[in-house]
Amino acid sequence: MSGRAGSRRCWWVVRVEVPDGLADELAGSVASGTLGVEVVEAGPGRASLSIYLETESEARGAAERIRRVLGAILGPETSPVAPVIETVVDDRWVERYQQRLRPLPLGARFVVLPLDGEAPTGSGRVAIRMVPGRAFGTGEHPTTRLCAACLEERVSPGSLWVDVGTGSGILAIVAAHCGARSVVAVDVDPDAIEVARKWISHNGVAAIVKPRASGIAPLSGAEADGVVVNISAPYLEGDAGALANVLRAGGELIASGFPVGEMDDVSSALRSAGFRETARSETEGWACLLMRFDRGATTWDE
Image (cartoon, rainbow, N blue to C red; front, side, top):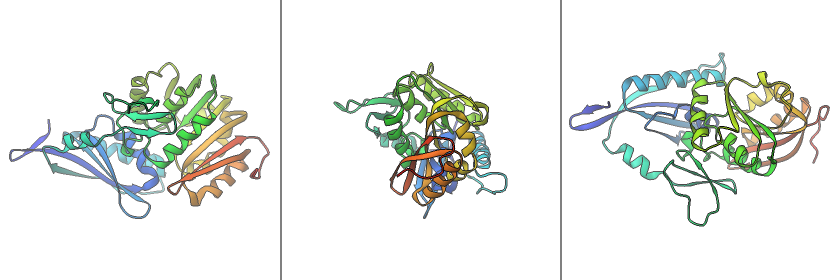
């Protein structure tokens, strides 16, 4: 149960400031079982996360998960900012949070809705059932929107796809609804996989999307038709070869999770691993690359 301050309810909140590009992935990995997560800008390139919980023990558990996820993303040589645990006295916070939830259009074909929400009348969009909002890794962040739009164009019926760093599982769910025969959704964080498993089940695609707590290496030789990665530039640059090993010849890579200023460096690293750039897109300062696996290609085909 939550605590009390006088006659009012007392919630627990875990706060942490992170690079803006990590906010969506981090919040999605810790959102399951919380009262809600908020993300606000904290300065240029920075975002502040507030994760609300009922008990102190839950808050301490969430803080430990945040430390573990940041360590996995940033690497052992980086010391992430430690999360802070506080109390918040507000007997109507949950009600106000739920009232702010609205249908969230995603790409041209989908809309993200709460489990009991209704799609806008006449929208013709396919409902993806999650808690809408950037904080939950459910489609509001520009890189998620870029990846979803690209998946709508590139996933063909009966194809095999891999979603690397699946988080909430939303991009794997999009790929399944776009006609993929099978989607392997991997994430190095076991807690994130449990979150993804929940939403995959709620959206009726458990027979298609298979979540796995692992990195990309165990899938080497999978001969996938496509891979979608929405993580960060250092991952794409460091694991370009591993991503190539998962694809068949002619397979496609949708790569996002980095700002426009890093697009050329990411493209160069991927081309060195045998990819050929076929398209690029951007929105709100964030970038997405579409690459085709073509061993030996090292220049951008304009």
